[in-house]
Length: 231
Length: 107
Image 1 (cartoon, each protein chain N blue to C red):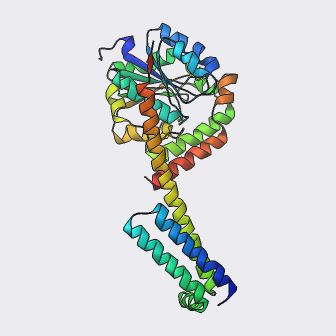
Image 2 (image 1 turned 90 degrees about the vertical axis):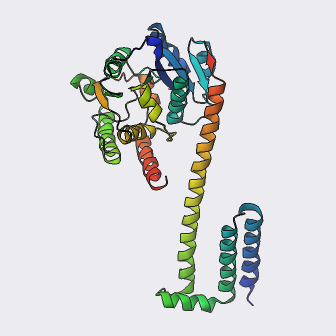
Image 3 (image 1 turned 180 degrees about the horizontal axis):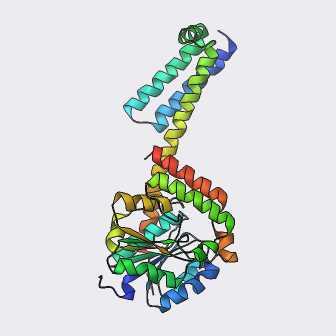
């Protein structure tokens, strides 16, 4: 059992032009007393002015680098602030705070170093995923399995909980969305213990519009393959 | 000498000189580019040699041989550039990250 207060739990929230939803996404998290690190990934929609005024750690990339880069910046920063647990959390409001509690439990209890959210454990969560997205995710699960040797029930799920020592061992070089596969790869290579827990993703009009398209998935795959060939 | 030779040879010489002066400082790189340049000029001056080499290698025409090698060379340079870009991106990321962390605002 880890000795851990809520302020020792750091939410890392990469944000790229999410100005309109940040407040509603983060208010409940802040109210709970968690520490929040928002990494503005070079937004141009005025997000930064909103982030700066909120009671949290506000970081800003001078240029847009990608979600993977923003996550890594946030993790590096959180570790320097003494984070004991790290939660990766999307800015668009697609994650539920009560799911975070479910993921936190095994990590705080010391049962696993990493807890990963999965949409495919509970039937209801699975049904909440739009059909096309479900097909796409199934393919991503297979690709991830082949590439990393770690067969999970979900892929590219943005909700994760990492213990401090897990976060210290992980370093994302993949700036784009391909970081989602890279992180799994590193979990396996570093032999970090992990669990998957059910989470529900809230597919709002907003997050659907902003989310990744099918073509993006193809792009991610090419990125990863190139990465394999040219270290 | 044919007209085309008058056009191609200065062009190659120009490329080699620019390359040597501007881009590469590594001795090995310089020797390599010099060798490629000289080889190119020889091929322009003596097309029959290229044809002979092509025939020996089992390729019909000298032109074909040159275009095969040309394509290979281009591909190689693309990959080289691509990996340079990745290095550059990594450095840029490191710098942007450092800036973001030093200028972090806390409330």
